[in-house]
Image (cartoon, rainbow, N blue to C red; front, side, top):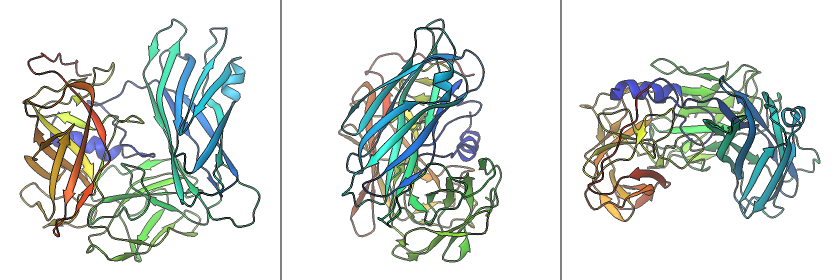
Length: 434
């Protein structure tokens, strides 16, 4: 698959949640089972209930499921889970076990009844009374699905960034709502980190409630539209290019403003209501590495192939990368560019000039990029090219992160993702491309 073709798939699939969902022909997860967490908000000391919905897209139906709900312990003190209509209709039980920062759950029963689409379970999150954060990323990860014949079914999952509002005297919190919320949370779509996440021309997301009554919509052409699902995002009064819009999340491209510029970000909901985000400032860089679904696997392609550098996975072109091979790493928020096109468009490789420098770390091994620029056909998404040296560590989950070196010499680090690397001299068996 060509770089341009892959990048178009990236554009279409910058969907809800904190990760880049790689789904489409060529990088398609043969998805048959998906778990998605509903939206909600809460105030410190109270609780919020989020529905975990099951969707199957053909093939074998699941008879048992397992997943992990991960959350910041500083914001969420405990989690309880009850079965939903889809589980009770199939006479299934839900059993969960919690530890600090995560809850693992299993849906099972002494029967071979298949689970149908619908609300599988409801997770009630108790928000820590003393928390001072304004949002908390709730991840759904390590999903496993089993069919009646004890065969594994490919899965994916979508988490949620919940807003935590200051105590306002109200005693009632709800989950999903069609009524626009009073505020939206601004966060990095690659890392789910909230705060000053806009960098010049980079990507950002807004999370909240009641943005639109229409179904989720993704941009499919360039230049990017400034309205999706009758929703707009205005930054300092100017409509921003949009990549994705749903009732609870909108992904947009930040403007090309100088670092330090004040940002007034407001979402205009389908109803016409203006939903403000917290005041923000343009960051010189806000690097984030994209991941596959709700995992920590980085979106890292083995160059000249359409294969992700990860353990071989059924239904997805994948294999271990080998020392000496070239990689394409996908990221956002690397900072200012020179000679970029208009907002919502992309520039050609010959036009790209970056103000900041980038370093790559694979384990403890530092690698200099061979190239860094915008991914073709994908505004706001960067493609970093690098060659794996012979001395990189081997393993199925080798850590990788990047550093952005600003003009003043200060360093901004990205989140850490993983990739799979074969031992030096070990042959890597490619998977078949669907």
